[in-house]
Length: 588
Image 1 (cartoon, rainbow, N blue to C red):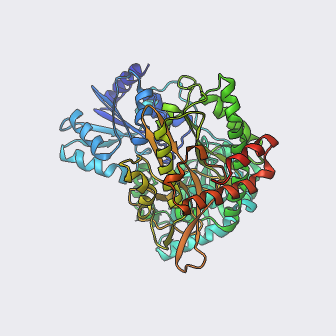
Image 2 (image 1 turned 90 degrees about the horizontal axis):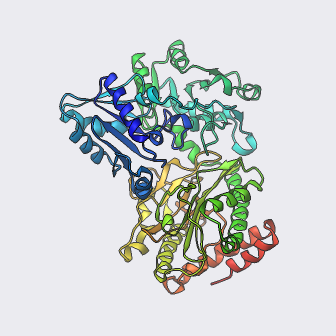
Image 3 (image 1 turned 180 degrees about the horizontal axis):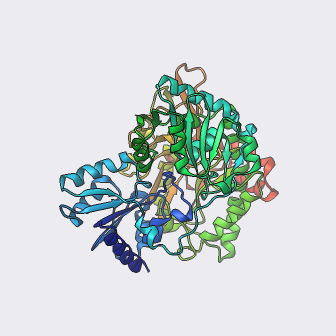
């Protein structure tokens, strides 16, 4: 099937007179999770991870993935005639320079790429006299005969009881920044910024409760918002005041800019696709190129959003504990695999108030599958859980008052002795972040090493970031804040929610990750300093801890955290789980 699709794609490239083509994972909004109609990379290669890119030439094809997806890509590519390479600009450029010759053209869909994302590749190709050529029609769309229709589910208001700030207030707050920048409008590039600004949610993207939208915010606080006609409801019209004009044609956004005599637009090229920038330039509109102000504004949760996050995590923690309490018996009964575990946990979450969806596809990895960092279980790969070894479950829920994301690694029975050392080193890194006090202005990259030190001491490491931002009933992976080796130059600020998730992965044996969500707050008694407070409530497996490797302050933290978990969740779980919870949170 894949070879047929590759050949059909190459025929279409010939028709469009280009010698190669780039197939990214994202959609025109640069979403991490995309509708089925935009799953072009999966359609062509079989790879279903959330980050990757394929390049196709007349004779060869390659899939580029990062360290999180190395093993998954190997499995999903199978025997397809597609090479696997590391996802970085240098590797992509080198591969293309080998496959294409001087005078060739490499096609790309300008709706699916950003200019900064293409810039390093464009430079390398220009040195070889290879043209990077935007295409009017995506060649995959031209040959994908059964491509699903773009979604257009009903958009709905998100109540003030969850947002803590009315849309009109947000629009005035953000539009005030336009005057400071001498800009006439701000481009609203994607559904997440629109969801936050207009206090709306939807169902168009898997695991991301948004409607597919984009728009323009003007200096006076009014706005033009694009949304498919099918998504507009009476409730939405009543929710959006008369200062917001709805349009159901993307071209109408540019017509509105002309009609309002917009001369200068604030755009963030990191999250705005090339096609949009091209259209604005054709209108001779000056571009103010700076980071989008809404991305940072929505990252700093207000008191109502933080209270909602705490409430959602309590309900979510109760669901997770009921799952963990039932897991040993389910495993002992037999015929219970990774996929059945996902279904059981989903069932537990569905019993909790407000649950609407998983916040991402659960990572349910037993034994060797746990070593695949972003493993996605399927009927073909699901391993049967046995009363031995390690099991990793990384999952989360979407609730109207908050988004959750939690990972626990548990022992199902006897396990390799060295796993205890690895687990404890990961735990030490988790505690190091959880207890860190740091000065205001500190960026995530400045604290990442605290999470890795215990592993580095043993010559070990992990190939993913330590923490990502999380939205408020929005994306489980939200910027601009993160904790990792890569520089962000984004200071951590009060109200930001991040994950704390160091890990270790032993290929072919097991994976270990301990993840809590935390939020940034001012450190009481330490003027100008910040710290983290845990949101996630779930026991950490004491069987896997080596107390001899833990300091007394670390042991105290574990006992204190477990006491909080026990006291908070005990009234909310069934009798069987209460018994399990008492044992799971006993002092070390």
